[in-house]
Image (cartoon, rainbow, N blue to C red; front, side, top):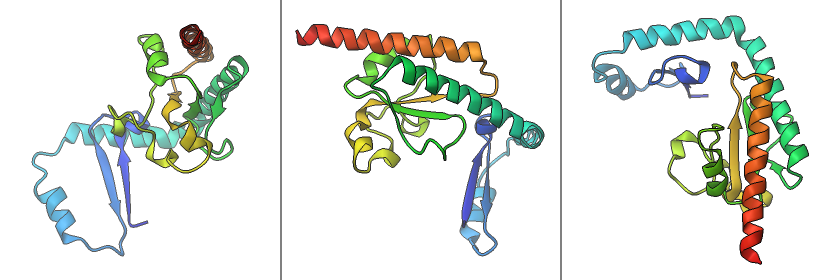
Length: 189
């Protein structure tokens, strides 16, 4: 890899802080000038917080990863059981532990999200594409991912998520999907 970028908030550090690692094989004096020479005052407390988050990740990361994966798998199992038409996207054996990416064919995201507001934190896309109605760029291939791209929901679990949190979220999501589905059936009659 030539470049690797890290965001502090992804490991429970302060927002707005990150790190860029550049390969020894790459020489970019203009990058150094732009990033270091013109950055202004560095956010020293944020940088120190990022360092502490890295230290804690090294100490607790493996255990946190296991707990997060268990919560994700519990949420997935509940949703698959309660919503038989749900599609779990991606490779179930090779994915990030905190990510559950699902499709709900025939169910408009906006209606489900509206019913979940102030109940469950759920997104229909990556934070970097906030406000865009299109699918995740990585899902814009062929086949089911492309056909169902409009109906993406992405649920995240965190190290502080409990089994009770997961059960409540699954129940809320299932209830919202059923309510939207019933209202759509009523409209089509």
